[in-house]
Length: 65
Image (tube, rainbow, N blue to C red; front, side):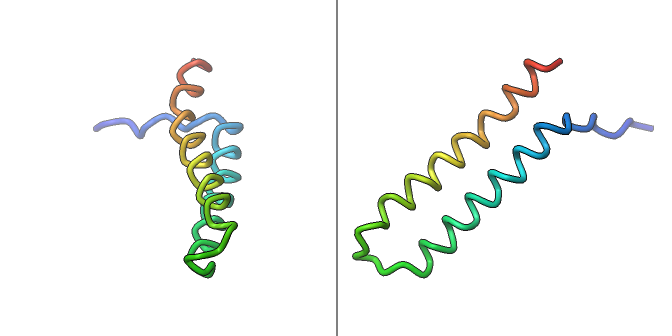
């Protein structure tokens, strides 16, 4: 029988949760924001940065092992 995958470190898990909230709220703002809003690019940048930070988490996890 195969073993379950190892659990991610608690700090990575917590950080991922915070990033998910940021990304999700940026998504919601973009859905509600008019296409011509001057703030649309700012919210898109927040979303992009959140996704980039989420993509770095596996590298951080490797550093901890």
